[in-house]
Image (tube, rainbow, N blue to C red):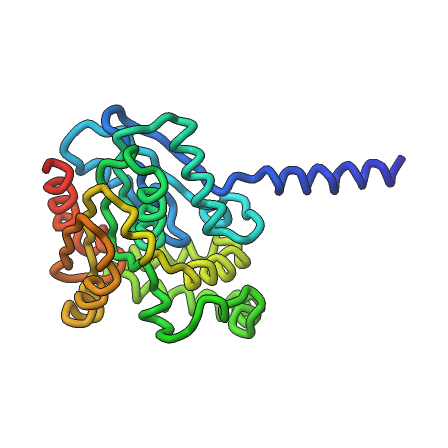
Length: 277
């Protein structure tokens, strides 16, 4: 009897994990639907202030991802599972006339969703995201050479709490100039499921959406951060988004990766102008 109880507990844990959702969605407001897609480790609530500053009536869907912000982790591959569940979610909710707004990895998801969902999507806004960041960070390195089981990933998984906290702070400092937001981003990193953080990032490095861009028919606004300089980042954006048919590219006047923290008014103005067109 004791063995049976243990078996049932183990089985229950397995079923619970297997059924864990790759996404969590919180909804507010009424009007034109907007799917707000945050970046890696970032909760959907990061978009709340942006949503409050939109001029118009919108039904906002704030997405968070498995393994982050207290959400249960899922099995790998991570990114492709999230994408599939988002597509299924949009179809199950019968969302049409949909606007996609994505930051960083959320911008990649916006491209993927716009390509797959076709006429359901009417506009896309991408905030500081490249379709293939590997090309900039690791030029010449093929995607197939990046594996979950690698020396770097093993090192990250085995890193002690104190060392990892220092790494998290350094990363946060490189993402925004606003000190209190640096602490917030650091907290998101530290509360993340470590395997999701490490292996999920491997998924992103393998990603190359440049061929997918030609399938996106909706008009797209691309907002880039000028870090380290506009002169360095602008050519990368132009080159990587060449295959996008209908696009407008703007670089923020200052700030780092989290433009909504460093240049909020500029971001709100660009988004509202684009949505009103």
